[in-house]
Length: 429
Image 1: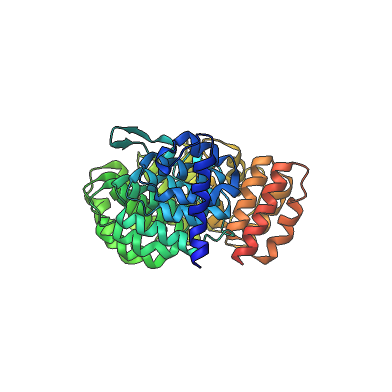
Image 2: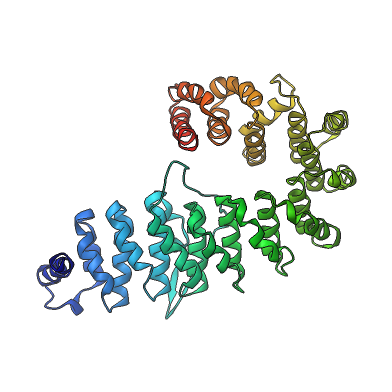
């Protein structure tokens, strides 16, 4: 065992004595020497890992960058080690490196890609887009999730903690939920927000009660995220609080989020609320009310929703009204049917993000999935790709033959998505 522990040090020392800088001791090593070392790929990882203990911050930083970019399974152990560094930038870059192994390309888009150092401080910005997550068939190592959870609780800076929370969400790290819950008791908006979004991606309903204290947070961004998370995690016990927020908030974004969350928690006691807002001047409130009627699943509401659908001029609430009609039994696919309207909208860059989750929810019904087989195999490229993802999330083993057919589609992108969806379906079922 002693020999194995000494080997990385000896390799590093050998490099330092014979490397491009012809240094006579480790202190003469320069960042450009470390970059040169990184060109050795996976074979260089033992030498790079040894540099994580170097007293020179610049050397440790460059070592983390090189290990992250090499991105093999042998990168994981040293990157986990680097998450324990005392410097925030090294923690952040190690975090992004861990995510990059499971989600290739993340180094170019993650928080670390925006970092700039000015003296002893670092600055960066989180992208507004926070919808990335690995495929369900991918299972990260337990020690990776544990390392990120520890960072979310105790990272060197707020940014390091928030970045770790985001990483946990991307990797669907369920085991780190207690760490996220603790992180949400931070006083910093970024940490709380990223922890909430991570819980949305993990979708563990048992975590729902732990965020109730944020439903009336004074920061609207945090409050909206907490409300959205409450709805997505189907926390019915929070319904009275959500109704209270809807009735008393003066912030339109908060009120929209509250009504949308109420609509995710079907209860006959909410019928009066839906009736109040189905004709509201705010199109997002009309949409949320229609979604509420949808989940009540009362066929007696269908005529009213059909009329509202025909009278509606805005696309977003019209999609919600189409969703409601399908939920209430109009599952046929025909030229002007509500289900066909949802499928057609998958071709719209502006609204496919609205139609897709509706189709995911609708496809939990086997009858709806069978109606979608034709556009899945004969639709446009965007329809095939998105419906494959719908089947992966909501289908069962009976849908596998359809995805198998799509995996041989003449369009290579559709075929690739068919194969990916099949793997995700098999992993889930």
